[in-house]
Image 1 (cartoon, helix red, strand yellow):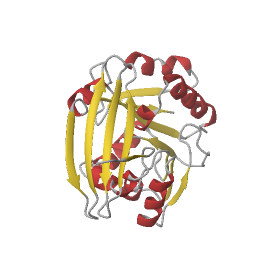
Image 2 (cartoon, one colour):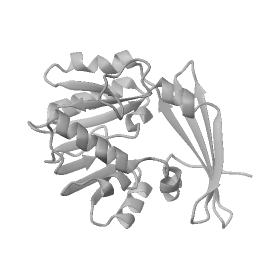
Image 3 (cartoon, one colour):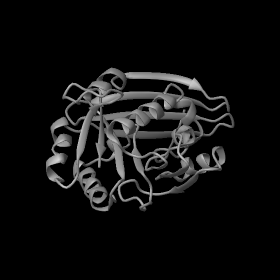
Length: 241
């Protein structure tokens, strides 16, 4: 079958929630609430810098909620599903600033940036513009989770809307790039191919951010725990204040 190549999150927006059905969004909400209680930051207003279709924001118990995503198709789905939340297209690397308690950028979003210099510039931007009392929570997928779930794995399924897809994952160990090929087939015969790249950054580079931005405090955690992150962590979560 011949598939038309399209940018990431173009046609996968229509099956994204099905693809992410195994993600424990309620667990994410509980974890961030626990972090807020332990580290003393507010959650009454939240701004998701890579909101996707808005599932996390919809579940998160904040009075004011904002979300941006680079993908316009994803934002269209988010607006249709959750009309009570303020969604717009935007670049997470230099997001429009909001007067909120909490910025979040989770689910490995920064791994999709091809250069750690660009990630560092993003952290510099956030470090410059965070106001007193604001907190930024973000995360990274590390080598362990890629080895476990994204190395030579594949599966096929069909969404409730009848859209079939095949997902194939490979990992280039020399370049530290995880590649996901997503083949999407509609009942009317249209077929599309999206290729997604995740860049696996070095643990030491990430931790060094705390030295580069001394005016900010950083907490590096093994995600979903309160343990300090380490080189063998599957995922690393960072609390920046």
